[in-house]
Amino acid sequence: MKKQTIFWLKLLVVALPFSGIAQLAAPVKTQEGLVQGTVENGLSVFKGVPFAAPPVGELRWKAPQAPKSWEGVKTVTQFAPAPFQGGNPPSGKSEDCLYLNIWSPAKTPKDNLPVMVWIYGGGFSFGSTSEPVYSGENLAKKGVILVSVAYRVGQMGFLAHPELSAESPNHVSGNYGLLDLIAGLQWIQKNIKAFGGNPDKVTIFGESAGGIAVSMLCASPLAKGLFHGAISQSGGSFGPYRSTTYPGENLKLLPFAEKQGLEFMEKAGAQNLADLRKMPADKLPMGFGMPGAWPIIDGYVIPDDQHILYQKGQYNHTPILIGYNSDEGASFSPPKTPQNYIDGTKKRYGKFADDLIQAYPVGETNVPKTARDLARDAAFGWHTWSWASLQAQNSKAKVYYYYFDQHPDFPADSPRYGYGSPHGQDVGFVFGHLNPSSTEATPTDANVSETIMTYWTNFAKNGNPNSKGLPTWETFTNDKPRVMYFQQKAMMGGVPSETALKSLDKYFEWRRTPEGKEWAK
Image (cartoon, rainbow, N blue to C red; front, side, top):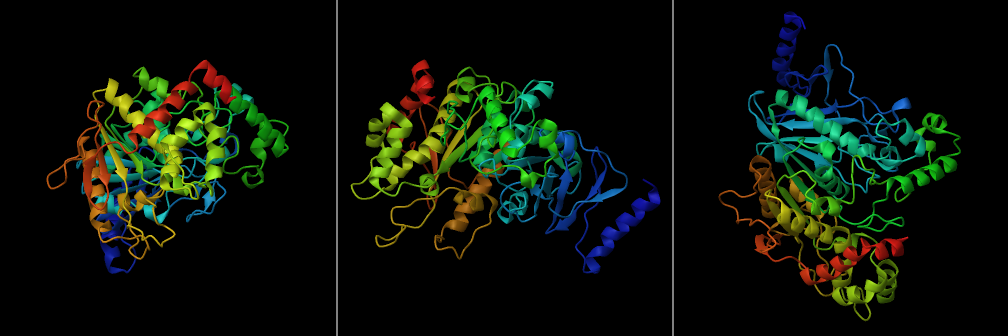
């Protein structure tokens, strides 16, 4: 770029604060070209930075390709559209969706700050980086660079099909959404230094499907070396594969997923892959819970059952900070009557149902939290406990385990009596975006949020959440399985529902036997 152009750009940056227009940040040079964001409350903010080529046309259902370079300065001040999906995200939706956002407190490229990379949830079928609760300024003000990365969701992100596998150099299909995240992390390795970040100190973190994706990246050889710490909120993917899936047993094998891809093509009315790629996205038979909308064991991105990989020590050994919420089961269609609960438990768990009903008891006339906790643990609690136990058993990388239970004590006449913290409640606390007018707000929320943000950013800086002035967060070991409780304040305790988790563990262990695999068919 000519010196005269750079001079006028710098002059514009200086003049803008006096013009009433949002102040532009100094341009930053990426490998593809210059980008220019805004200055907001002392942070440099870049929204809608491309990290891969638009996955459209012939690139639909292909691994992400490198972004094209550009001339001049690209203005990156608005969130890009979210991935194509059934919902309506704040920034709209499009197949052209592979963009990331950066909040940086760095003053120079030499600041070498730790980097936190956010992965949104949404059941792998929904999600967007533009959700207001994910805005990264509060975490960035604590001395980290916050990056949020988009990835394809639903059938656009995870559809498998024999023709797709045949055209792939790795002879696999599906898992495009995970490959998007890996491409985003690769872009960060190449470019984050220019934004003042340290590519050797990257922590991935996510909630729900984002937390599950974190655990999958921890087990994927393709992500090796791309991050150095992992935080999973209500995540983990340690259940065995199953043709008829349930929460916690969501994964399918590639051959089965390919058969479902054939059914998808037939339902779409397409004769071949070329026809399918030409169809408008909104004409495809997509939806939450439908086949082709979840990661699969493909032998490439996800090499095997993650529990088995961890038993063998075949994963990316980084420190982890993992946990879940106290009443996740309240958020996923809890059974309305005791009989509903009993019938559902027998259908899913077979000969283990009676033991689990005893471990997670139901009332005579109601379905209390003790029963809802089976859904919580099957989807999140057991996976977190297994992840912690397996890593503590065979890795030097430390484990920090938490249990989020921040809520008011509901009175006996309240419809919320006996309820804990539902799925997703923790996200606002992590990002420092609380709703003080919520009926479930408590006087300690702000302090708990501040504590959590400090723990999370400490972990990103040091691989350890502890610092002066905070309650000591002890590491989790199998000899001393200690858990941090966020319960009006931060305090250590034992593993929640540990005896019940052991009963659930027997079921998952049996499911990996030949008898258990055959039964699950």
